[in-house]
Amino acid sequence: MSTLQDKRLLLLGILSTHSLHGYELNELLKSEANGIRIGKANAYQILGKLESDGLIAGQEERVDNRPPRTVYTITEAGQAEFARLLQEQLADYQPLEYPDGISLNFMDVLSPDVSVPLLEQRAKRLAARCATFDGFSDDIRASHPGLDFLVRLTELEQSLLQDLIEKLKKET
Image (cartoon, rainbow, N blue to C red; front, side, top):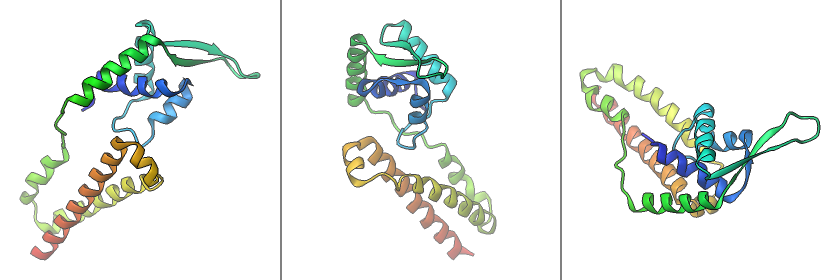
């Protein structure tokens, strides 16, 4: 489960490389490359707090006849906070939570005739998730170790799930 600190690190990290307005930022937050999810309302709430803390600055910008929009830029204090959060988190270890493992631990309550089709549905959903990573080249994965970790973890989950399905099919 991601924490507020994780979300602050992500938003400051994105803004440390370039200024963005809210729509662009939300599009980046939707990317499968992010290890965490931040909803639009939550992102704006956190941006407001980062701005009130002096870590980012929002400046209204108008393009042509479009309504004004706020462009967010990281401040020097924000860069320092980003560096502090990054260093703290790089040194930390947070065990992964895997709520789906609970259902896997209790699936022996069901017969393989019931569990296999359910696991096959799950495998299709997982394959769709894996497919979202296909657009990331090896160069991008190499320069973004967090993304590479997420891709490898998803591939491992897919392999283990397929092995489990095959094992259960042999039991029937």
